[in-house]
Length: 295
Ligand code: FES
Image 1: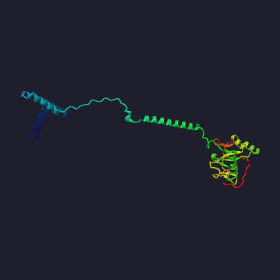
Image 2: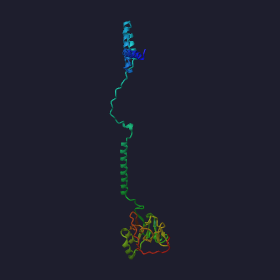
Image 3: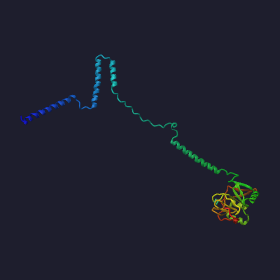
Image 4: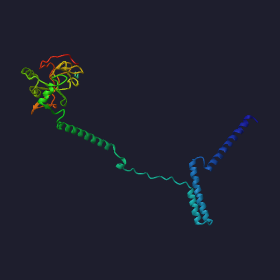
């Protein structure tokens, strides 16, 4: 048999066999119906079939004389075994916000700021009122800062004449002042009237000048120098003559002073009315240096 003959027989046989195999395969797939359904679908079908079987079994039980209670119990058990549906909670409606009670919160920031503002204002007003009261309060009497009686004319003159460390320098501590005699001759008073005025000049006409102990430079207490017969400040060396007029040193003026008056035979110094000392260069008495300096 030739090769051509074999091929002529084999090819039709192979084609026929292939057609038979394809036909059989298609038939089997149609018979099962599977291959096109998803797993979830198949599962649902199986559960439905199971429920149908339960019902059919129940019917069968009725048919076979099973009691109604038993059937009911069987249905309840079957229902229990079935998966229960997921419970969906009802959404809660939003509620209006209400502030918590004040006794739970304590002091709020707004309350704290309000109370602080009121407290600050009250403190400021209180301080201002206290300052006004202090300003308007009557001045103390009898002490420094008021009009002080330092003695009778006779006692003051005696103190001046017997004063130490040198004659003509008398210190009265209650007035924090030196009470110095002032020449009352017309030439000296004429010089004083060119420089001084007011109550201080009136005291000079009475023969007194009250010099505050405080140095007008930087406030040191100015002592007396017995040898020079001047006031000489030990702090920076300012020097003043016997009536407090500046002679040398860094002080900006002469010694400050208070008014002196004589009332009813008594000498008064008004320490509440301080007058600035005379300008540099004032020399109403012409008193020169009488000895060596102390400072
Ligand atoms: S304080 Fe008196 S000279 Fe300076």
